Image (tube, rainbow, N blue to C red; front, side):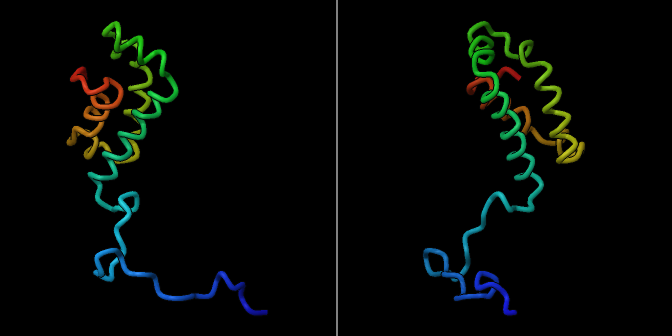
Length: 110
């Protein structure tokens, strides 16, 4: 029995815009540890904002973000460190940058 039609190769992929013949690189497939760490930090902090919007508004309004999100920040830091490695986590500012940019709405709080 022949393989399904979807499994057989078809035409070659079309070249990227600009005629270079190369496909654009998907940043989510990047193997660069720094890019991966930055992306993960931003995703973890964005989740805090999505899951706790009222708490975030209160923290920004009252200047209590650090205290209100202390537990979430600890859990996210542990997840971040585990996934990117302690060395990368501690030698870069990606996590802190994401906290300030995303959670603190651009203010330098962390």
